[in-house]
Length: 115
Length: 113
Image 1: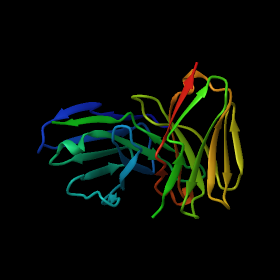
Image 2: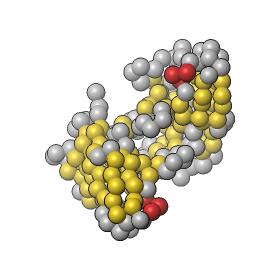
Image 3: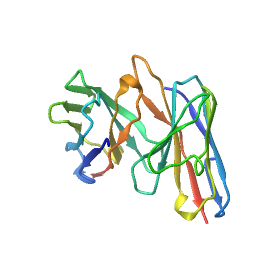
């Protein structure tokens, strides 16, 4: 499996500000995704990060609030914009490869607290 | 839309006993069913998966079964140990198109000593 890192691992931010989370993989991967996991809850897909084109957002998530970049096959960023306390959550990136074997692996997550 | 239901939400078993977690899915085109284990404060980890061309898969104390007709799949853990305590998530996807994975709501498994 790929080695996935995220920065920052945690942050405390004031409402109205923005935070950019980075996801780095040690090898080229086809698919990169961003999830949100609220305390005690399951994983909710925010969007699929597409290399060289706009991300594909899930229902309830919009580009203005969660802009995503994916400049190459090993790196992606998620920005949480104009934050409110409701954005307090763990944000995880995940990666997967298409082909004969399709498995998806998660990064360590970024714990965000908005005050 | 696609949906994955998971039961039970919490499960407590005596150490050494078996644990079973059940899931149902709504998208009949789903053909890939991974299971993730998430320990407290850690990332979800893929522990086993099954594809729709097989009905059962085993890996040591863990097994998954799939009933495509009923759109049910289950995780079985035998001879449970304290380190099995975690939250388990089932999921479903159409792996051939590298589609998104839809997760169940999770089962918090506690192993009683």
